[in-house]
Image (cartoon, rainbow, N blue to C red; front, side, top):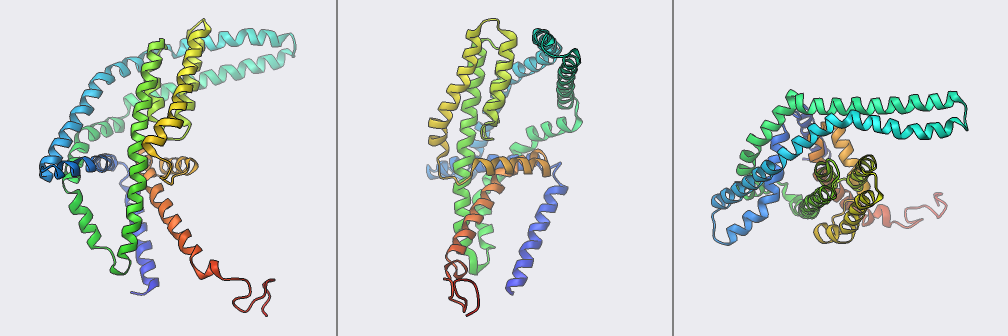
Length: 364
């Protein structure tokens, strides 16, 4: 097979994979989630195998323990989250009215300094913003609780994901060995080296970042609840769980928590404590959690992560968000490999005038 034929073969295979992901994006969620769970738990299965367990026994123990832990956590948290979401939906009009009342004195101050037309325009803008926010929140909550596809995805995650994770974890080593046997002989070693780099990048980022998100979610939720902030648990958990998007989780959590604190508390101390919770969380994440659990050699720049997550979400929805980090890791490793090959090639190493040209680029 010539180089051109190889290129067309791999481009065709890539196009088929992308088309399949796009066409089947509505049913891929439990399979992608099961693959992610199997990837996360594979090191534990390998360790049990070293201790003398068979692969099937190790897989059964780990999968069973994982399901028990997840179910226990959901049984503890879901009732509280459900009640807080319902209470938040009920209090949204109250919060909107409080925002209008807080804007009232400001408009009264402006009324003496600017024309009445400008004041009325500001009032209309504020009312429109609050009304739009209420409508958006209502639509989101309605889609979450009333969407048939949302219920389908939830049921598929609960039922199918553990089954997929069990079989993939049981056969993980055999699948890797089979894929390795399919590699083209001339490039097998290079592909193995790049695959090992991708695995190290994913292991360093995905596993480490998952622990960081869980720790931050628990810390924010417990701290905000102890302060007495309304809906502190759901806000804290949400801020922690989306902390895999650099700075987004902390910024959203800080803004929402501080806004609710201003509306809820009449004293400055609770508001200051809410702000301190997120400041401490960011310091702990930046100086301890991320360096210790994720490391600084994963090769995934924050801007690249944000772009990958947004692009994956636009193309494939939530499935694209799940695939964004692995794809970003693969593209990053391949880009660095291509750059290294370019820097070692004659195209980069060739000196001016080496191919019949002088330093000005003119043929000599």
